[in-house]
Image (cartoon, rainbow, N blue to C red; front, side, top):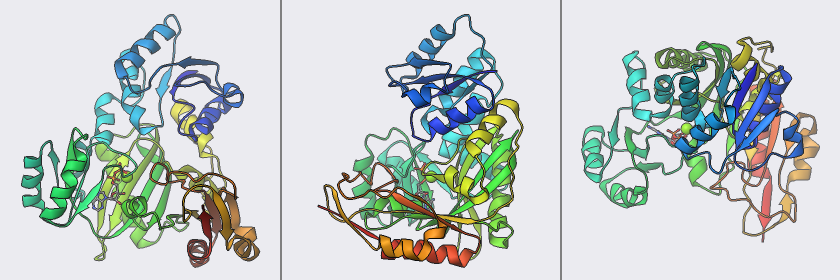
Length: 402
Ligand SMILES: Nc1ncnc2c1ncn2[C@@H]1O[C@H](COP(=O)(O)OP(=O)(O)O)[C@@H](O)[C@H]1O
Ligand SMILES: [Mg+2]
């Protein structure tokens, strides 16, 4: 089988999906900007370097010219900005996989909500907005607090909570570069993900991760150490409600083969409310958390599902897995880490990954990457023990830069 895989170099986890494809015996034709390093090259049987992955018509023309005379079986992409162009290429080549219309339901946050609501599921009230006038009329119907965000954004970019007319006046000018936006009822509650590997829209593996705090807050406050905790016991009633919602959403949107990443809220009254869903794996190490939960390799299993439509990993859940992202105080280079030795002395056996930047390393831009100044991954079979460890990493470990 011959597969075109878009952007095998970026984001960083794409190299693992590329490896997965090679490991299930697929010939991988990579398309990306920049050139792959020697390790990545080993998994690629050919590579087309393009000037830009975002100039859609140029990309499509180049892929057609490159493939002339060669037959291919799939066009795949696991990065949000490329799922639509992958669908267009599939349609042009007459290949199996999700259609442009189905993918649109996963990209356009208003269409997504309309389709999910039509299936009788609870979504935030929302309106598509193109102008300041639209925003005011949406707010009139929705009330405060509300959310204003791009219709197809990612990573909480250009996403604002507004609590008053004053907030709206402050926020709207900052969104001038956003062509199309959505104004939504703000849902107060805990935020979770629902992640799956699916065959024909039916999950063969499900995972739920809790955000601490909610994604927008972690992305807006530098002093916070964001945490994501993958929940081992999916049978808890409040988690089951989110899973039921997620399954319904996938049916409503016509998911195909591959991975999904959904976000949902649980209100103080116990209601579950849809947030958004993507027809690709979650970023920010979500796939790693799922792998550590069951000691499996979903990079490879995704590849098997996306090409052969079979899934071979175990779904037995062994651990609650927590990731703690750290942000240093101060600017420049990391000078000192406090509390890490103590943390290791206490929890060494439960730490499965440590990418914290060490003294001498330049700080990263926490706005640009949730990876921040590095992270720790810890795991434990017991939920309370996992929570304690993550909380100790949040409050007890501090990076300082100068
Ligand atoms: N209607 C809403 N109510 C409450 N919080 C929201 C709402 N919409 C978005 N958010 C917050 O903003 C974050 C980013 O919004 P989201 O729609 O997930 O966009 P992105 O595609 O950038 O991830 C969410 O994870 C959530 O924390
Ligand atoms: Mg989101």
